[in-house]
Amino acid sequence: MRVIAGSAKGRKLHAPKGQAIRPTSDRVKEAVFNIIGGRVNDANVLDLFAGTGGFGIEALSRGAKETYFIDTSNEAVRLIKKNLEATGLGDTAIVIKADANKAIKRLVKDGAKFDLIFLDPPYRISVSFLNAILFTLGHHVLQSDGLLVLEHSAKIEPRAVEGLDVESTRVYGDTAVTFYSKKDQRGLQ
Image 1 (cartoon, rainbow, N blue to C red):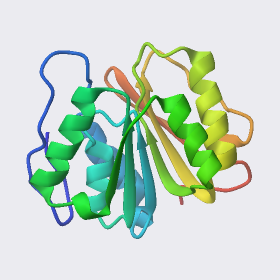
Image 2: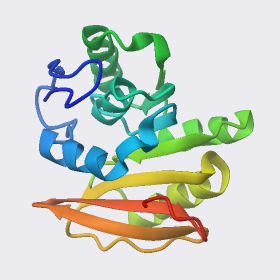
Image 3: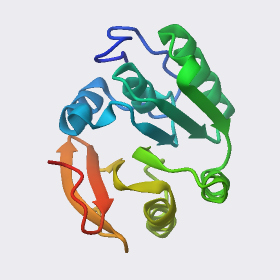
Image 4: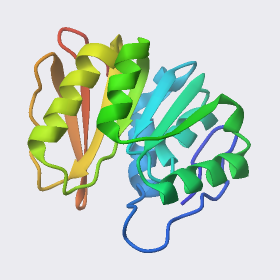
């Protein structure tokens, strides 16, 4: 695992031991950022279920203004901090150890808004819980012209969630990535 482009290009990211944390492959990450393009410049970013922080760190390296990293795992939080230190990108990062549901409620309460949201939940997450998260993020945390990027198992068919449109889904082996924008807004041009 490495940073693909930007100020930290080529820096290796620390990976977890075992299977508890499933980092996004460089191939998938590069494809996602090729699709997103310049939208990352000066963006406020949320990396939820952050794992190693790969998506958020890539965003910071490519010019994001600030990134919130949220994960419930002690190991994930340790890896995110280690990777931020290794890349020198910690000054514009906020790392929060919290359950996704509690973290989202806090973000809503604080009035936080994000231009880009990366969501990489465990593949075993229930569809109803995932849809509830997508609904809350789409209605309360995603900017009106923002983009939500969901990494998920290719076996799951993404569906529209009230207030969000599915713009596209790309499949990379066992992994799929679905791009959502707010209804009546087109995030990918």
